[in-house]
Image (cartoon, rainbow, N blue to C red):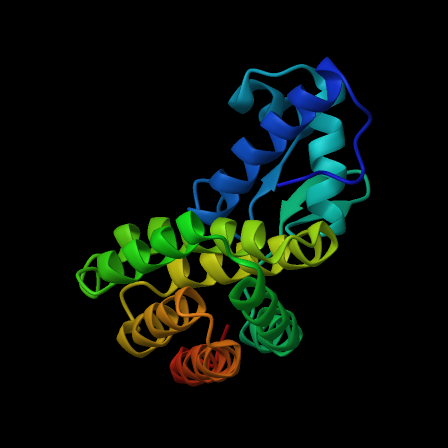
Length: 219
């Protein structure tokens, strides 16, 4: 994904690498929600220097995946049902826009790729991590088809929050309805059916909202 905030050159590449590594550790819960960590911990964890890691931390803090605690360091932002519902409310119109633009703009080879991902998703209902990998692949391809880096930049942190939420609740919820809606949306984009793709995008968000409301209300 294009980074709109980093300067060019080697420092930008290292900062982007640090961001990608830390984002993955946050999403997959290697960095546990609510845990306190230091800048030094994250430098050691990534094996990347202080300046790129600091830039990555700042970016992740802006996306509310880290919280800066004065005199204590950093806290991994806890996972919240209320926050997740806000994330989904924000994602809904952006996902619709991406689906519409992708359906209108996708090239033939991109449409073939979307159809292939949809077929793979049909076999991932009981394979949580396989589905999340496929969803990430789908999101990247949809962004490429849509061709608007500003929408992609707005959606990226929202998707990170969603993935992290599903890792927390992977043993409590079934993603089958959401997987079905996502696969259908990919098929409709591949067919250039922008109206149908937008409806399927809405159905996916509705399925995710239902799942969030089924999770433990104490979080």
